[in-house]
Length: 71
Image (tube, rainbow, N blue to C red; front, side, top):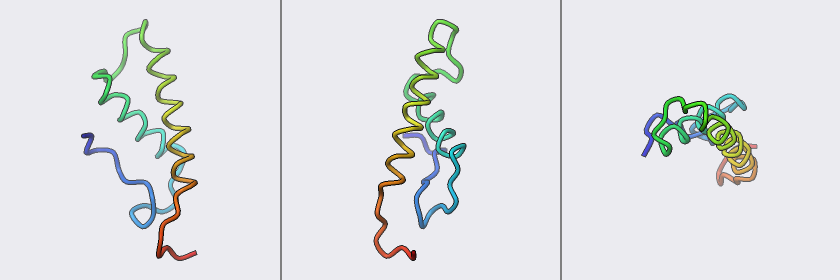
């Protein structure tokens, strides 16, 4: 789908920041909406989607248990 979105879980990535998660969310919203930057009348919906996807993606990454990971 969107090949520029990087895997953000160990062992593929360490020390993932909120900015990393937000960048992935932004890429996702851009891809599915078809807009690089939305028109003014769509900006609120676009920004809300980025924020919600950032939040839920961070929650997902926080709750994943990676087997064999060193702790």
